[in-house]
Length: 105
Image (cartoon, rainbow, N blue to C red; front, side):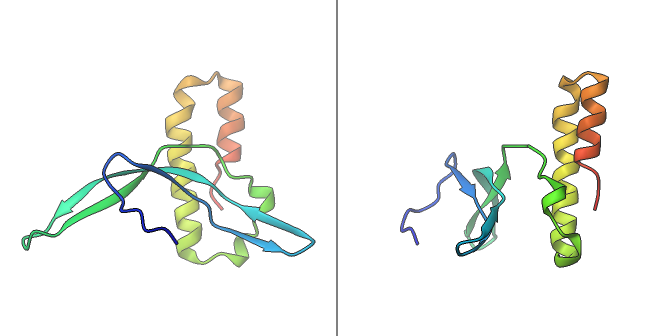
């Protein structure tokens, strides 16, 4: 645990993972940016995270049947954003590769 207060402009990583001792593990990482979200009518100020790194997760290492519907939806949305953000910088062959790597599960 950290006692550091999150502030607008900070970067941090989100690193969920699972490890089998002495065997293997997996960790999926993203870098996040802290930004303002909303202020409530009672003066409460909220922050949110924006993903700032976009790279496809290797679907060969993921078992979709072990994921919840929300997890699959998150991954599919992340991969959609990844394709949308990166594809304008790629040639047709690279786009086809990225399209396959960011396919919906």
